[in-house]
Length: 269
Image (cartoon, rainbow, N blue to C red; front, side, top):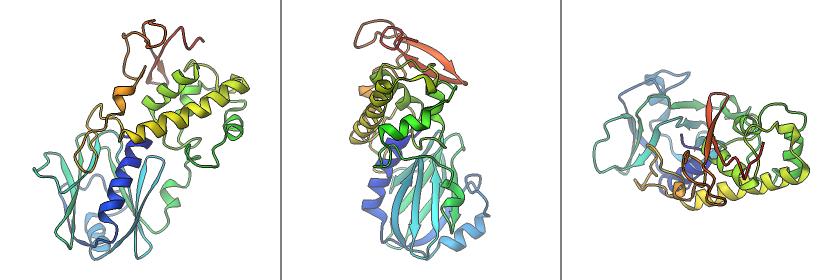
């Protein structure tokens, strides 16, 4: 599933290519991604509109239009946005066409992706938690967010109403870097552990953005490139392999129906 680094990479690439462009037409082969709006109304409200800005909130991509509306896209598990793909994509759901002849193609193998066209972004992203790369996200704020929480720290990191954008694989990497077991109660972390986790979250996400995200499944950049962040993963998706620090075999545990990978020696419960 595309997480914050992947969506941020998409945002950066699209911002450099589609800001200032105007929609000339839309081809909707599958209306399932459209939420709270019909295919006909979606086309009617987008055609002729100019893209003013491309932003991001958590895992949501925000395409802000000159008329004040916002096209919000959530890629979910297998969604992708491709700029002017050379070949016809098998799982294309929506094709956005621009007046200059360019195209932005939305593909989605499993059809879980979502698109909203709203006047107020808060209608969709208003309940998201803090951005982990923002100035507001400090060690002290993280401590307050975790205080008295009895849920496993891994589950809290995945709660998008607490911190927006962190997903399964980057939570695993941050917890490993901070030497925190994924099943530890969030409220039990000691001050130095919270400080280490704060630093680990920011470092892991920043480095992944620099590698254009992780292409472990269907994720591609809009340019068609693959991200390379997964080559730096130390525990995520590496169950059964040896820990890069102590050579102990990396284990997998279920955290609220999500797999968590960790080193039982480096991340003691």
